[in-house]
Image 1 (cartoon, one colour):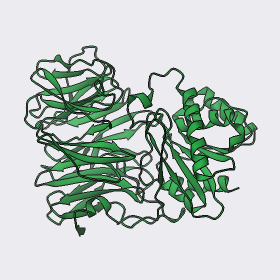
Image 2 (tube, helix red, strand yellow):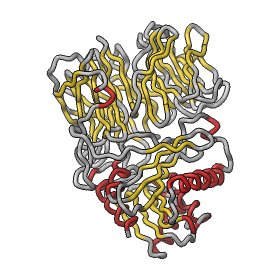
Image 3 (spheres, helix red, strand yellow):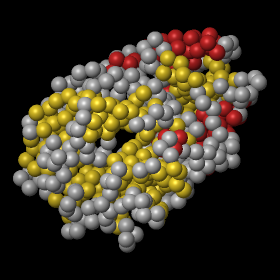
Length: 544
């Protein structure tokens, strides 16, 4: 265990895996921590092997100096992700990728006996959480709630009221479930009586998760997110039949998983491409971190903070801060080579990021993220950093529809969103071209939905685009533009069930486009060996 003695080290720790081209790829972590402070257990999923697999760290939270790490061997050819620890410290709920690349199955894993049981898979599983004081595991199957008694190995009977749900949490006494339905309303479910009560009626549809977080004062009081006032994710509080605004700002905010209090509230906030931690205490706001992306953050007993952190030079890693000490839990252990991006802000105030290679003759590519309701943030990106080493400068563009700048920029209800996205990208690229004196045609790298936009942009502006990389794309129409094309996707990608997509790929093959199919991968590429292949293929394609 490595200990660094300084508060600044909490945000700027320098132990990360070296990534030289494709020689060594940093271990990736899924962006979720699972913690049980009473059990002194922490879990996350990492791709040390071929797939993402849960790792459990025992003894890392109490500062004893002794910790034990165990990797769960559940499934050899699919990724698995931890969700929740049982109150008796013996079980962990794990999501398993389904073979059709759509949704997840639910597995109950016995930590001591190293045995697992399949609990549910119909319609896809989400939001699995153990009761705080009983042998019950609640989860969403499709859009229905299920409760499994793991001691009796039976399902607990639940009311069949026709409400469709998308997330849940337990109250601290374990007597009720707090549920968010597909219309953004919040309900309380009395388990013993089988009764639903609506607590918060949505004034308008909320596109994200409410992030229902318990108030540690007990009862059915809780915090939740709403954009009904400012158009940004703001923090509200419910108690005894009343809801009220707690904190509002012109930034999207996200609640934590650990219970909070009105007089000492921690939350995450988007700030110029960073995801920072803030503390709202006794009506005073303090920003605890500055740069980087904090994917997850826990407030544990004894002034202990646990976080999953990354920045432009830092592959995702788990850190624990106890007093003045910052403890490194891994999985990455050396500093990475990096290029710090420059920020470009468009007229709407949305930031995009320009990475300039040190090569004497630079080639330029635009990186279009997926979603579209996602945001490119200032964190380590193995693809971008590897392309930079190969002399390719990158413009990571947060085009119209990206999150982080409020509802207006997200434009979720725009029936012509794709057309307006093309216009937005064209305008921003013109300004960036002028500022960085980019005269030659550029290449486009589109990921998932970003590939759909890349294809449409190349068709509309053929003279501006040199090459197009369609990486796990969702485009289902072949556009006859002159730019060279590279298609990369997993052999189990769910988009291959779309006849439009397979027809488009057939046309691309006939047009002699290069196609790379990754074995044993779905829509999201997780195997480090395949990540190396992607880096090699894209680099070679853009350098030709």
